[in-house]
Length: 211
Image (cartoon, rainbow, N blue to C red; front, side):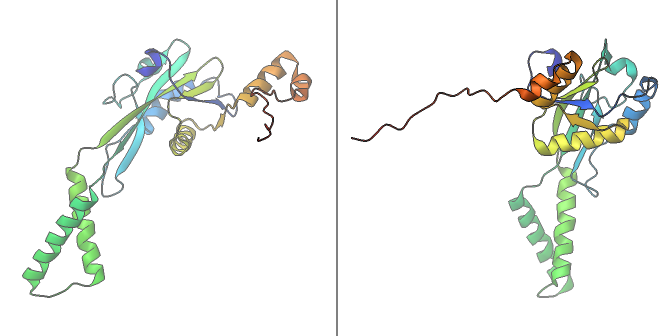
């Protein structure tokens, strides 16, 4: 589990509002409701859900498995199945050729050809081993900051959506200024923060006249 193995790159969020005091009693139920389920290729070649951060195969989550002192730690597993385009084209062509011989026809309609391609695609998907990725989630029960060990925009949006569906609360990205604003409000320094000017951290260059 990378969260306990050293430094990581992650995105930080905070809850839109404090959860109910009794929310921990529902954590196990909520996690299991949105736990990882294997890919069903007839529905989608991709699946994601919560798992044990220490065991990617364990989707039977309990509070004892995810609570570490003042943190809830669990994983987001993402499985996707892909078919090589060249392989799909070759198998589809073979299936269409076989159908033409069996039906003693010279050609198929566009809809018939598309139906063969889709059937072959689903058959090939069902035979593939999914590509599995595991991302860590750490939720501080003291600050209610949430850390997610992926930086891509698309996956972070999916994470926020699933988190909201699971725990019935939205997440707000903790950008540097928002973190500074929160601290300034706690220390009574919000006016001073708003009055600060951006620092010039790069050297100033002047045009050198050409000779």
